[in-house]
Amino acid sequence: MTTGAKLAMAPVLAAMLFAAGTNAQAPVSASPSKAAKSRDIPRPPVSELITRIQTEENRLDTARRLSALAVGPEERLLAQKAVRLADHQLDLAFLVALRRAADNPLPPTPQVAELDAAVKKLQANVDDQETIVAGLKKKLAKAHGRRKESLQAQLDMEQAKLDLAADELADAREDLISAGGDLKSQIERLQADHAAVDQAANASIAAAAPAAGAAAAGSDTMLSHLQLWFAVHSLRTQLEAAQADALAAVNAFRQRLDTIEKEATDQGAPAASSPAQTPANPAASEPSGSVTLEMLRRQSRLQKIQAAYKLRIRDMTELAATYGKWDELEATKQNGHTRSLFFSALWIALIVLFGVGASRLLRRLFDRMTADRRRMHTLRTISRFGVQVFCLALILLVVFGPPSQLATLIAFAGAGLTVALKDFIVSFIGWFMLMGRNGVHAGDWVEINNVCGEVIEVTLFHTVLLETGAWNDPGHPTGRKVTFTNAYAIEGHYFNFTTSGQWLWDELEFLIPPGADPNTVAESILRMVTTETAANAKLAEEEWARLAPSTESSEAPSPVSAAPILSVRPTGAGISGRIRYVTRANERFQTRTRLYHLMVELLHGQQAPPLAGAPMTPLKETA
Image (tube, rainbow, N blue to C red; front, top):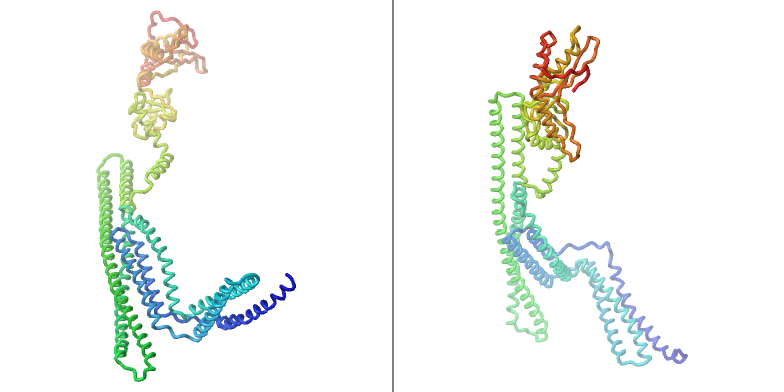
């Protein structure tokens, strides 16, 4: 910039600095508002109008909370009506409060007076600054060249001052509202907050209604009816309290309406007589006219307040009636739940009586039986326990109902029972196998897990044997009962010597008398045993031949021999012999007895005649 330009700009800059210094006095004059602002200023008491608005807000919150508990369609309609009436009540309360605040402002406290003066001074400063800014904008629109640049810089500075003054004014107004000096602004702020949260509250009610309906639609069990009964009882208590509050509000509104009507009557007489009066001094007519106009306006506001209170009385009466109808519906539902609880208790009593009667009947039935007392006692105990478990299961079904995840519960219970009752399950399956053609029946002579004996009983889970000696011992009972689980039919092995086709090798031992020819005695015994067991040996060979697997080989299979086998050996007491032969399992004892009898006769001199064509056998094992 040249020196001439700088000299030309000097007066402009001087003027700007002078204006800035002059206008800077406004923020300084606002400093008392900052000084008056203190955090230690006590909050003034809440106005009665604000208290009434808060009371109506609480009524609206109560209506919304109760509407979230509505279940049926009739209850929801009544709940929506209650919310609508309570919301309308709150709107009327705002309207009445705004009009009452305009007619009866609160008396200012020293703090409020100081803050109000600061607000007015700041408002005047803002108005002056807006006037300056508007003037600069007009000049800027007509300026050109360098003057336009200087005006733009001045406008920016004044705009910054205006923004600062506006912020201070807003801060001072907030302090005034907080101190209770601007009742109308407080009410308007509450009204704005209500409008902001009203939509969100209605949306939350709409979302909570299906959840309440789903919670109330429980199963038809005693526990669900008991829970619903308590829920309905709690809701009825709240409805009765809300109805009583609405009726109390109706009485309060009527008292306020009477007070306002009296106030309107007192203020209406002078206002009615004022037009008939003729002012003595014409100069005083203008103030008298303004007073009359203000009285008319006040009378109009009072009439509007009266109309609003009449609407509030009507709406509050209807709200109380709505709560009463809702309470009647809930009372009907509560009576239904009471009847359901009564019938559930009756079912439980019947189940208990059935259990007691069944237990006594089983006791008398088992007492009359003359079978094994120990077994009867066990059966009676199991039967009584089963009846008790069955009755308990029925009572639990009445109280809690069937489980929701029945399939999953059955699957887990089945898996657990399978593991816990594996032996019983296998025994039960083994019972089906034992009932087959090659199974075990009562009276059979069997060998199970190296224990021989006669089968006494075959039940669903057990097989009972009367124990006898081993196969080469005398078949006399030992007097002991041996019980096996039927799992041996699947997991182990058993031999049944009673069914057809069951053969076994039996043996006899004998001692050759001193002085007798061992070869003659041995051959005589062999011929005798061969003769007595020839029929069984022939049948056994035929049966073994049929059971032997057939082969396609050119060589014929060697025949299976069932002929007796004789062996003779010297001992310290002389010469002893042993002969083995094939016999049926069920004929073993009879065959052995008969052979012993013939052998005694042979060894004591009553020689059995030689068999014709019987070859002589050497003193060694011969088949």
